[in-house]
Image 1 (cartoon, helix red, strand yellow):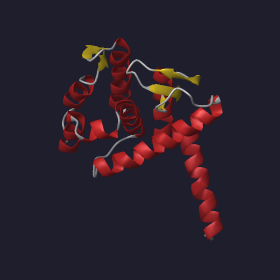
Image 2 (tube, helix red, strand yellow):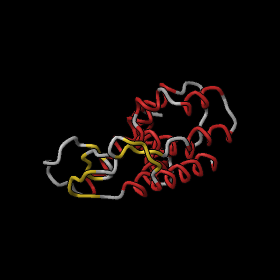
Image 3 (cartoon, helix red, strand yellow):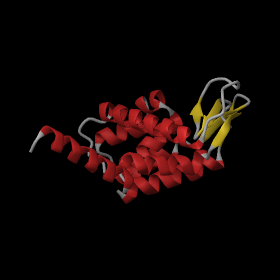
Image 4 (cartoon, rainbow, N blue to C red):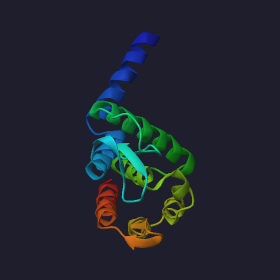
Amino acid sequence: MSKVLKAAFVFFAVTIMEVYGGHIDVAVRLIKQFEGFSAKAYLCPAGKWTIGYGQVVGKQNVPDVTESQAEVWLRDEAKKIDSFLSTQLPGVKLSDDQRGALISFVYNVGMSAFKHSTLKKRLLAGASDLEIAEAWRMWKKITVDGKKQTSKGLVKRRALEIGAYLKG
């Protein structure tokens, strides 16, 4: 098979996978469901300036974004998180649903938080689904006025992410 034909085949396979439910699509669907879209910067419940589909921008005065540009940013970030997960979970076999759920989780809590999480430790240890779900559910609090409190939105988000993970 020629190099051009191989490249075309790989491009086609990747495109089909993303269109029909690859792990990036699973992640994007989960993230969009909870982040929603905003063309204008807004202050999220965690007190961070955010735009698009939960893209942290750090300041209020940023240009508006289109929905299509926000999706490009979201997919780019999901791909970065996917690469990050590959380095953090060497040898851990994950289905598309499991990987997509983890990408959504890391998108929400951040790479640094995941690096030191009980969830990561349990995944690396080959823990049971019940133990993994228990560690996942711990991430349901936000800080408001310097105090930790349970967020109903995060409880729902974690339940959906866990459901996608367990579906895998």
